[in-house]
Image 1 (cartoon, rainbow, N blue to C red):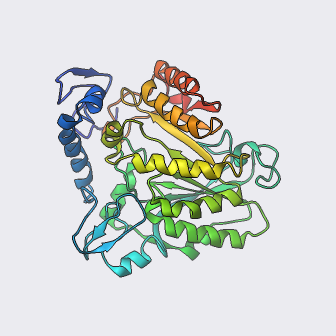
Image 2: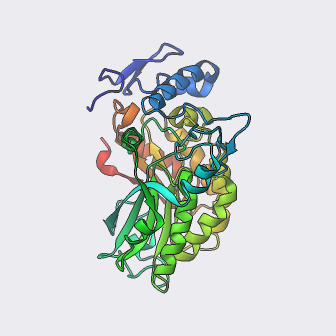
Image 3: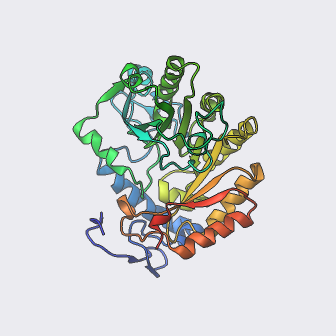
Length: 377
C-alpha cells in the first residue's frame, strides 16, 4: 500500500462514535457507515475534523467563506462571499471584482493532453466516440473513432473535497504557484483529429465560464466538422448555468457525465465535505433536456463503489432516483482504487460489485454496467 496520511498502514479502525471495530477499511473517515447514517449528530464533528486537516495541508479554505460584506461568486452551491485577498472554497478566485471577472473566465488553472479514442471514459460504452452512436451527425465513424483524439482538459480546482480523490495531486500545484492558461493557448491544441473535448478535474464547475467560452471558440474554429463537448462533473453548479452547458453538449453530440457520490446526505457529506441536495435537483433538470436527444445519450450517471460506504443500498436509492427520471439513462458503477485520505481502503470486491449491479437493475435501470473491472478483487 502507498503511504498513509495517518502515519500507519491499516485496514481496520475503531469507529469514533460507536467504538466498533471496522474491518476492511482504513481510518480515513474515522466513523463507520452505520453511524454516519444513524448518528450524524455525534459523527459530524469527527468528519469535519478530517476534512479540515485534509484542506489545511494545502492551504485551502476549510469551509466556503461567508463574509458579511464581500464579492459573491454564484457559480456553484457554495456561493462564496469573499473579502479582498480571501480565497473561495475552490481557490480559483479572490474577493475582488478583478479576480471575479478574470479568473476562471478569461484564464484558467488547467492542464491538457490528447487522449486517443477509444478512451477510458465513463461514457465510452454509449457515447459517439466509443460506439459511433449518432453517426453521421455526431460521430465520424459507424464504430469507435480510431485515429481521432479527445482533448482532455483537466481543471486544477474543485468545489468538493472528496477524501478518495484520484487526482488529488492537483492540490499541490498551489504550493508552487499554478500557471494560468488563456483561451488562445488552449485553442491551439484543437486539431483536425480532435473529435471531442472533455472537461474534468478537479471539476469544471469552478471555472465553468472559461470552459463555455473556450467551447464556443473551438466550435467556431471547427465549424462543419464533428466536435463534441463533454463534461465530467460532480453536478454541484448553480442551476442557472445548466442550460449553457446542456446547449453545447446537446447540439455537438457530447454528453454530461454526473458522478453521484452517494444517496444518503450524511454519507455524501462525509465522503465529499459537501451536501448533495442541489446535485440531485440539477440531475432532474439535465434529465429533462436529455429527452431532446436520446442517441447518443446526453446524460450519463456514475457512482464510485467505495468499500463499506457506497453499498447496494446506496446504489439502489440512486438508481431508483435515476430510473424515475428515465430508465434508459446509462449508469456506470466504478470499481474503487484507494487514493488520498482513503488510500488504506481495499479495492471493490467482486461481491460488492455484483450486489450493486443487481441493485441498480432491480431499481429499474436498463443500461447499467460495472467499469474498472481490473480493480475488482
